[in-house]
Image (cartoon, rainbow, N blue to C red):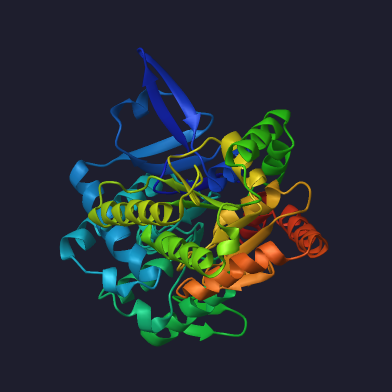
Length: 453
């Protein structure tokens, strides 16, 4: 049984240096989890492509790139995907504005994916479509006569009906997804939201809210909750490396404080970085005894830098960090260390190991894998996770501290609780969290989903 993956991103990056072309596996848990399966099953990965040299490289398995023009990418990806679906599905409708041209290109690119898959698919292939960029592909394949098993997984939140109905293309998006046999979400909340949207908008669909099934077009569609995870063993083993231990010691000596917190995010308005900074400021205002003894490391990975909204949020974050550091700095100490860059795995894990707590303040997030990465790095079963109640991870795991990221007092109190929690309680909580994530890693997530197909 061959596996066909359709995703916006390629599993490998093509890099040309001094007339030599090299390939490098793309970062992210999804690619890491699927790569061995794709190799074993001689799979096919269908993705977008902007580089001309993509076609001249040999990969471990077949990659079918769909060449997009700059205009197509601007409207399908940056436009409909990231300026429309992204804010709406993250419960920020005030940032949403529908543009017909973006929608037209979204249809066009989704048709390119469907046509590409249709051109080579074999009767026993299993097709697995990834994420919000390709919501129309399942139904387009059915309309083309494809009888294969089709799965779809949504990696971002799926909003409730009152938010979802904001988009004028709500019915077309739902019908697009109903071409799949299995539709997966991270949490039961997203699962129920989707079922409710189908119940209220698709008259011909029979929705079973108890068993999470949809009867539509003479097919039974399974709607499943499958929380994605990480490569636990990779993070755990990296944290045990001597080179990481050396870096951790070096970082602790450099920061020279009693308490270190960490936040790791793509620079995105959904991640609540600005709210986090305000919460830290409130913490230092209300607990001045920690001034000079506390430091927070904010790692912000550049993201979607061509989109104006992201340029604005970077400016706001830069300004907030400068203001807070200016307000509290003394004797060479500043409360916030800011890294605007992506880090390799070893450096990232070193920062995780260095920190006494992780602060996750996303306003909405499908899952938030930073939560799980931090936990996997805690090889001594210590540390704490302060978790936003509005992310997928909060429905799966209990870290002991849930906060409301819209309330700076909640963030401040969460920080204080993480600091004050006894070592015995930290050990108890973290031991359970690590065991859960070890048993429910990203490979199990892949297996569980594919078993439903």
